[in-house]
Length: 399
Image (cartoon, rainbow, N blue to C red; front, side, top):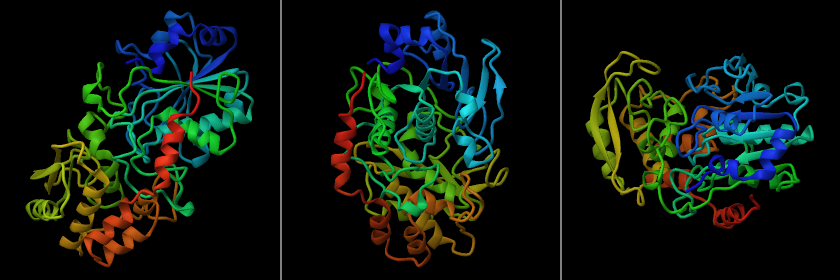
């Protein structure tokens, strides 16, 4: 299997284009080839140096925690300025005209994990949109989706228009089954941008990828794309596990298994595990545990909770499992459980859980303790039209 970066050295016309005029680079620490060589080293071997570097959430080096603004810097190797695309305001998420001035091409290589909330794909889209407005050609080096590229396991209702945000700038399912390049191209087409070597966006596609397999069967290492995404197991649960960010349950940050582990000081993990196993969902075991996060929610406190072990990935539906877990935790401890009310991903006036679900109905159904099946239907359903949209996105032009 060859990802976009693996293919770059063999694309003579693209290399020539990058060599002939100043280009920018939007990348981060996991932007590596099959030999784990970082994109900066691959470019150096091709005698290419970016005039300007852009970094997404967590920074170009990948060291910052979630929702922490990153300052600009200078690349110590090349001396190129590093422009942060994750600051303190929504406007900081897009490159400014002055950041793009003098560039002919923007080269993008960001890793995605197949979930609507994961912000790198939206950083890529905002960069493409800004570059197109400035007349700058974008080249996105694509990578496979580590949790699979078919539409069959897609889940999570697309957002209503009012709930679009940086954890989902366009209405799509939570688990969408696309690569970053396919998703950005899909959104670019919806916004009227052309696709191809002479258009606004060119996607260098992945060769030799079986869309039906997980990253555990790839012929390359899984490189953690962000500080709290250490393993493929994390990526498998993340489409559901990220929902915990909208609650006062610890999502396992400050442990070695974030998003797989979750709980709170007042939660009965054994009772929650029993209830989850009785919900009629498949492909996992919820193991009761106690844990003490070293940072983030409930830092230093002993929490009751569970660890989700995915036993059958083909049958596991993370949005359903974690939606059920949140609803059951709300029922178990109604006086202690809370939905997050603090500012979340640059939004002050909509609860985080509503942004994540893409509507306010699921939260209200949980608070009203409606039947669990009704809650799952509200949270997890994918419109039949997504099968067609998915097929169309997979078929979009690429190099």
